[in-house]
Image (tube, rainbow, N blue to C red; front, top):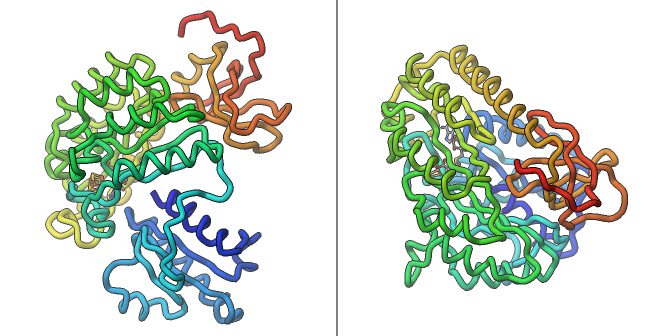
Length: 410
Ligand code: SAM
Ligand code: SF4
């Protein structure tokens, strides 16, 4: 979400004549887009703000602005804490020193894969999460506006659109006629020039069978689903106020895999939630071993100000235990991914080329796997068949398959 909002801000500034600076030291305008979802993220932003104090003192003409979730309603407190910051504005708001111009719909340098926000905020209030407090209640963008923006993005050369929302499954519940994500995907699937659609994040308590059917049936919708489980223990899920049990989650995954056999499901895990026992953590490990996710984003719990967990539950899992649990999940997942990727060697995958790095093109498969292959001619934004020759836990390497032959069954 932050990345999408940063792209949008860059577009605004570039439309006004700004150009991207080579480095912070040569910039006339610095906008820090902050994330405070975890304490470590917040500390990074605060350290960065302190680092910038000297630069602002030495170069008085430089303007510094802070946006993102660090900006709460108490701007006076922030101004006192960071007096060298010239402007504060909330996540998703326009920069306050610019005149309220027409919202810019397009990034100036269209890239093959672009983000499109379909809803803001969240109504779920998971006990650990600061998002509803900093980004407000859930609000869907109007259906027609999203379709219009997607059409414009495709006309400008976007090949893939990634729809964003904290809970994409409840998209539309607040709109007239209550269209849902399946309806939106069906509409976007018809846009000419667009090759792929993705979306995140799904909430296990809200993901409908209608949506699963739509993903299975719409050819542009990629076989990739981000479905955060957060923990493998019912006790912890209850304390997190997630609204589902482990068994319900397992059945949902089984349902998805039955309808979409090629699907890659990724998940998020928090370790060291208040009261998490060794047995409860074991249940999480067992769930990950059994379900074998394509990717796991694992984080150590940190209390966030204002949340129910921070107010009511002691952060009682020692830091060393949290780190050990994080490490165990990371090692387990690395093995799962290495095996999952190794099985692709010898097969051909369709890759959307997103850029080049170190003399190679890179892009992603429909399931979201990162693929590198030799840079021959210009292929940016193209769908290329790549024969996979090597695999690691994190990426795949291959060569362009010119034979068009991928007979073998995966
Ligand atoms: N809406 C999504 C969901 O329901 O899972 C995810 C949104 S949250 C902004 C992104 C991830 O940050 C979460 O999945 C969770 O794993 C992690 N997270 C949120 N609050 C956290 C906290 N207090 N400590 C550690 N990780 C946290
Ligand atoms: Fe946070 Fe996601 Fe829960 Fe919303 S659904 S409160 S964004 S973790």
